[in-house]
Image (cartoon, rainbow, N blue to C red; front, side, top):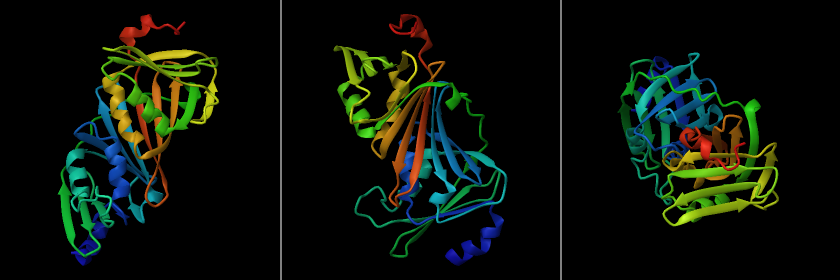
Length: 283
């Protein structure tokens, strides 16, 4: 089967190989809150994006350097795929188990209308071939989030943010994020059934690596939109939290894969406009 695959390599516009499929599945699990994802392929690697209506978007970036082999012959390619099916195929040898040996992955794609082919090999020599149907991609929403428009930025340890979400009341419809040059500096608030809850981080906290705030900003985001972003907290080491001049939020998670390479997952979330007028710190 492997020999046959190598003969066929010239038929594909993408041939990518990973010694450890977990490096891909961990990133995809971090954005898995919808059934389908849009895959963008370029010479730089893969970007896999999941959307929640027009208000939230998550992307996993798998740079070409993460792969042991990465050959892509076109300028770019895009398709939509069932993320559930893709993850099930990647976990076919139980790669989610800590003790299991690494599963090698070879991924091939022949272009528009063709399936995404996965060849998975376990150390014992067991091979599995998966062919996943691809669909025409819809246009993804452009959030127009640019670093030049960022007003405030905090980089902190993921563990700190994970603890904060555990303390807050997630029955709250909204999560309010305050960034300010003055105390309380960085505050996350909820307004749930048990009343208001706040978690504050001073700018000199040992959990905070970078604190850059030029003006006080407070915005509310729907809890239902922000909650899926907590999936990326577990595999990540640190998170960059940025807010632009429109109140759009970017959560960029730095994930160290099992080979020590750095990958990124980014969540973008629009502010909850219905509540704009209720802000305490907006004006």
